[in-house]
Structure formats: structure tokens, C-alpha cells
Image (cartoon, rainbow, N blue to C red; front, side, top):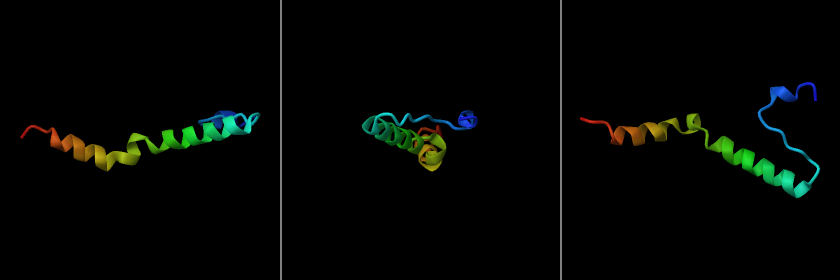
Length: 51
């Protein structure tokens, strides 16, 4: 627990179903980080650039 602040997320493992749901939500959030989709964002932005 001394290193808990070094992590981004906390999952309490007191309820297996709830903790499993928490892990799934964390994975979904991480997959939506903008830097993982930089190429797509750049492509979309390029469609709106004034020529």
C-alpha cells in the first residue's frame, strides 16, 4: 500500500463482480486515450482545415 499513489487506478477486490466491472471500465478508458488515436484525430482535423 505504500506504493498505491504510484498507480492511476484503485480496484477494491471485496466484490468479485464489481471489481471485474471496474477492471473492464479501466481498460475501456485507457483504450480511449487521445494519444492512442492520434492518427485518427489528425485525419478528422484535416477534413476541417480551411484551404
